[in-house]
Every structure is written in structure tokens, then in C-alpha cells.
Image (tube, rainbow, N blue to C red; front, side, top):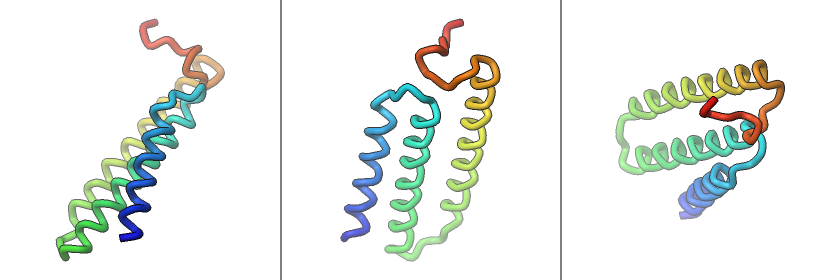
Length: 94
């Protein structure tokens, strides 16, 4: 019971950090990774509870690692082109 409350708290705190739209892209990416981690823990808790196979968790981890690598590549590209990672200085329409 305590672990499920902790997972829900982790999920909502990651959602709040992601939705607050901070100045830096790195902070928003960390909030997104915290969301992914809490979803991983909830899926792992669910599969452990019912003794399911953990193959889907492995696929989920592969997808989240590739998402994290893509986000870091975007961050590096943004820093190289604009010199900072401020969200307000980067225009998506330009």
C-alpha cells in the first residue's frame, strides 16, 4: 500500500514539474524522466503482484532509453545552435 502511494506521489510530482514550464529545457526533461520512472515502477509493481512475465518491462525500458537519448540529442543541438537551453529564446516556428 505504501509503495503505491509513493508511486502516485512520484507521478504527480513529475507531472507538476513538467507542466510548470520552467525556463530550462533540462529541468523539463528531468521531470519527464521522473514521470517515466514512476510509470516503470507502477508497471513493475503490477506485474510482480500478478506474477506476469517481465518481457513488456524490458521493451518499455528500451523505449524510454531511446526517448532519453533523443531528448539529450535535442538538448545538445539546442545548446550548440543557440548557446543556452532557455525555452523562451528558442522559437519552434523559426
